[in-house]
Structure formats: C-alpha cells, structure tokens
Length: 302
Image 1 (cartoon, one colour):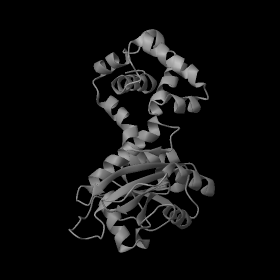
Image 2 (cartoon, helix red, strand yellow; image 1 turned 120 degrees about the vertical axis):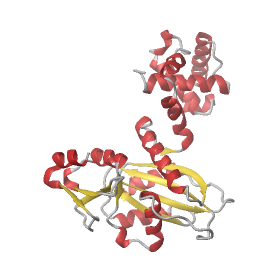
Image 3 (tube, one colour; image 1 turned 90 degrees about the vertical axis):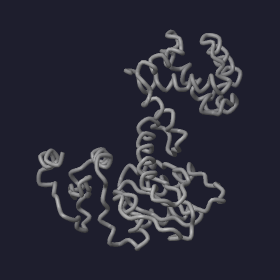
C-alpha cells in the first residue's frame, strides 16, 4: 500500500521515523508504526477521508497539547497508554465526533466556539484538518439537555462550513475506551455514507444499516419481499411511509414534515396496510417494514 501511495503522490509523499511539525503535510501512521505525510495541496478532501479510514491520522499539533490532551490523543488515536484508577475527577465520558467539509482557517477560534456551546468540561482533539473529537467529561447522574442539531446550525453559520456530528454513548472510564471510540468512528462514517441529509447521528440512527450489512444476502432478499413487488418501485409511497416511521409513528408530525394534509397521509398508510397485510402502526410491523425499505433504498443490488 505504501509503495502504491508513493507512485501516486510522487514527490508530494514522504515517510519519516516521526512526523515533523509543519502545516504543509497531512500525516498518517500505519499499523506497523510507520509515519508518512502527503502535501495538503495534493490531496483532496475525499482522499484524506479515505486514507483516514485505512490509516490512523496523526496530528502534528501534538507539541501544542497539554499533558491531558496528549494523554487522550495517544489513548484514542494511537491506542497507547492506559487509564489508572482515580486518575480523573470524573467517572464517565462521551465522545462527540465532528466532521467539517473544509479546513477551518482559525482552528483555535473554532475550538473555543464549539466548547462554549457545550455544558461542562470537554477535551478537544483535532484528528485531521477536517475532523476531530470532543471528549465530554461526565458523572453518571448528568442529565442530557443539549440540542446538538442547533449547535451544527450555529457553527455552520459562523464558520461557513458544512458540519456533521456523531454523539457517542456514555462510557465508564476503562481501558476499553479506545475500542469504544474506534467503533463509534466507524458508525459515524456509515452515518455520513447512508444518511446524507442528516447532520447529527447517534447509534440508533446507524443500527438498522449495521444489521442489514450483517444479514445473509438470501435473508435480505426475503426481507425486501415483505413489500409486494408492485409497491417496491413506488418511491413516493415508500418515502412517505419511511418519514412516518422516522416521525415516531406520529401521523401529525409526519404530515408536517411531508407538507401533506393529515388525512391524506392517513389514507396512504391505510392503503399500504391493505396491500401488504402489515400493520405498520405498531412497532413490529413498522420495524420489519422500515428495514425492508432501507434494503430497497440503499442495497438495491443485494
């Protein structure tokens, strides 16, 4: 892989025993501990994102980190170090990952603005010029009262960049944190892949896609066939039913999202129930049908 990257990027590609501090290169580390850098002007956002999924991005700003930030950087990104009992004053933490569509000119200003929108203490780490994580320090009895969708709107407006967030689970402090972070990082990438219009993701948003990807292909074929063939190409109807599910089976809320009269939506739901024999107004019918719609929409060639 390294040799192929050298051939592709030519003089814009370098390797080193350790990355040197410069704003000119994006640095990565392989599983074997080899560092390589690529000049920023020669790598696209899409290429940087792909390389970040294959290798561990390595920030060259670690010399500017506090000891606490360096500890978390090594633990999460390099899987180095371990947690000691009573090392911190908090008992739990949560990872809030972010991705922006272009580098921020003033990273410190962005960091301070982001942290100011969150309650309590956070540890901010850049993973690359367009992604990073806030480690939200928590105690078990903390109450969730943050509307993250509003945070993305505010930062997008202030910094003129499109932004996505993944709100992780709350984890007790343990040596498993780096593994939890890696899993949530994968889930974040899947969210951005499958749910383009959404800007804030949580595990329950991604779980249906994780389930579908792990299902046997023959079973997935059977699953999508719970929707009669003559309805499988009725994209308007399927989108209507999907929005109904994503509105917590609330007809009034779904009608507002669809800019549709409540009675019209109710008619479509009844029509779907009549043709499929599945009562989608109850959890089990809705869950099965939702998976079938996602299979048709995102895995058409399975």
